[in-house]
Image 1 (cartoon, rainbow, N blue to C red):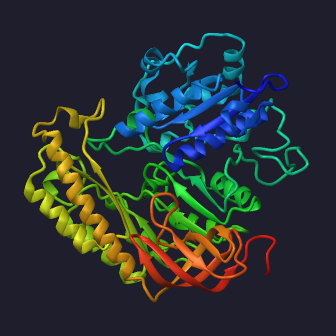
Image 2: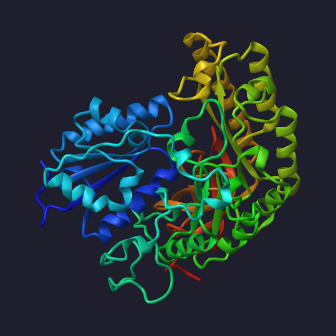
Length: 497
C-alpha cells in the first residue's frame, strides 16, 4: 500500500518508449511540481502512479499494458498517459479497469487538477480518439499560432497562476522563479550527463505503415529561443550532451519560415555553456540536405552521427511504404557523409515482411546493408497497425515467413555491425562518461547514441561522470567497444580544469 503523504499529493512517474516520451514526462513532472505535487521514486510511496505509455508497435503496447497492471498492485491510483492513452482513449479505459484514469494530451496542461479530482473520487471521462492531424492548419507556417496541445512544447506562461516549486521545472536553487534567464517547464527525472531535448513534435509524412502522425499530430517546430533556453537550463544542471529528438528532425523549421534553421541552431547549441556534445536523431533521408550534412559532419561540438530512417532499400517496397529512395540513393548519401567525416556514425531501422515484399526485395535489402557499413541496425517484423494504409494492402505474407525474414536480416545486421565495430580497432574515439566503477568507466562514443546503439568501456584512473575523454579502441564485442583513456578533453563540472 502507498505511504500516506501530507495532503495526499505524491506521484510516481514511469516512462516507457522513446526519448520523446522522456521529455514529455519531464514536462508533466515540471507541471506537477509547480502545482505542489511531490514526486516519488517508487510506486509504493505514491498516491498516484502515472505511466507514460508507448503505442508505437504491438510489443510496446503490451509492455505498456503490463506496466499499468503492475502499477495497480501498488494500491495507488493508476493513470495512463502518453501515446497509448492518446491513441485509444475510451477504448483503453473500457478494456483496462485497473487504470483509474486514461488521460490524453489535452489533459496535460491541467494535469494537477486531473489528479486531484481522481483522488477526490471524481470520474474522469476519457476522450474519444481522433486524428490529431486535423486539429492543426494544413499550411505549416500557420501552425505556430495554434492553441492545440503539443506534448513537450509547454511554456512557463502556462503556469502563470502557479507558485514555482522548491525543486523542479524552471526554478533557481532558492526556490523562486528567476527574474531573468531561462524559464523552462520541465523537471529532470534522470540526473545523468545526457538529456533529450525536443526539437519538434508530430509528422507530416504519410508512411503507409505508421500510425504516429494520427495520434501525435502534424509537424510543429519549437522556436529556437525556447530550445536554446532549455539547453542552457540543462547545461546549468550538469548535462553535457544534448540529444535532439522529434518525429522528423530534418523537417525542423519548415513551419517557422526557414527550413534551414537547424543549420544555424546547431552551432548555437554547441556553444551553450556546459554542453560538450550535441547529437541529432531521427533524420529522414529524403529531407537530409547537403548543407545539413555539412553542419553535422563538420561543426565542432556536434556529433558526426546520422540516424537515418531508411526502413528498406528495395524501391518497390519503399513505394508501397509511401517512401522514397533506393540502394543507390542511400549509399550516395552515406558516401557524402563519410567524405566529410570518415569515422561518422550511421544507424537506421528496417521493416521486413512488408506486404508485397518478394525474395528479390529481401536480397536487395541484404545488398544495401552489406554496402552501407552501418554502426547500428534495428530490424522490425511487419505487423498491421490500426488505422494505417498498410492494413488494407494485398500481398500479406504468412506470419511464419515474416518471422523467418526477420531472423535472417537480424542475423546479417548483427554480423555486419560487429564487423563495423572491428573496423574501429586502433582508432581514437571521444567518449562521454556515463558511469564509473573504480578504474573502469562506461560511456558513448560519438557514433553511439544512448539506449539504441552500443557503448564503450573505458579503462583509466580518475575518470568522472560527465568527463569527455579521448580513448584508443583496443577491442570490440558486437557493437560495443573497449578503449584505454588517452586524455580528458573536458572535465565534468567540479573536476580539474
